[in-house]
Amino acid sequence: MSALDVVHCDNHLLVVRKPAGMAVVPDASGDASLLEQARAWIAREFAKPGAAFLGVVHRLDRPVSGLVVFARTSKAAARLSAQWREHAVEKIYWGVGAGAPRESAGELEEHLSKDEERNVVAGVPPETPGARAARTRWRVLERREGRTLFEFQPLTGRPHQLRHCARRLGTPLLGDLKYGAERALPDASIALHAARLRVRHPTRSIQFTFAARPPEGPAWSFEHVLGWNEAAVVVAPDEPV
Image (tube, rainbow, N blue to C red):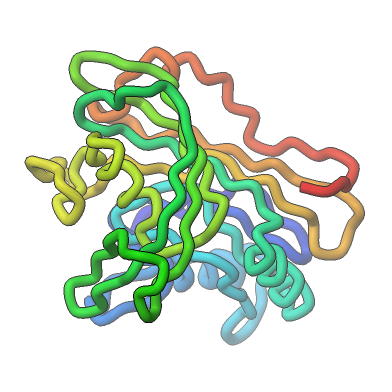
């Protein structure tokens, strides 16, 4: 198991970079999960006997990389979960799609329905039973050699929302076979990365902005990525997100 990549840790928060291919929580595969790895790190780092508390407040799809926030106390878990539920967290993802969209920026709004058996979502009429509204703001960061580097900002938190958005733009994410990619990536990842999160600290009157550079590899070989001056943690006075 690779070492845990810690971005920030305090008495209430643990923020880490998730590698593509690792599940956030244990699943039927039996593979090691990020949650288990993080709990083991907490136990070693702080010499805590038994199972250390760590609350899951959000998740990333297994083939997606990037920032994941865990809560270290029950109070933090409740307050952070409320921020996610109320869409008070600013989330920025980067993705690489095949081809290029007609526009350079926009906002996609539609209703999504999930096929649980196939684990995919599709756009449906609003009146469809179980349909849920999804809104995604997007813009092109760079075009290169038949690929597009996108910035996605999900304004709702629906399953596979960004993966579906990329398909609707006519630019399926590299490696995302479920949503129109022509071939898998060598490491079975998809070119989607949780690059930045802005969240209110659960017990202090400050906001944190966490950032994480996309993984290395040919899928991410853009000048915008290579030239990004990453500031891993930025702290600012609390104000509405």
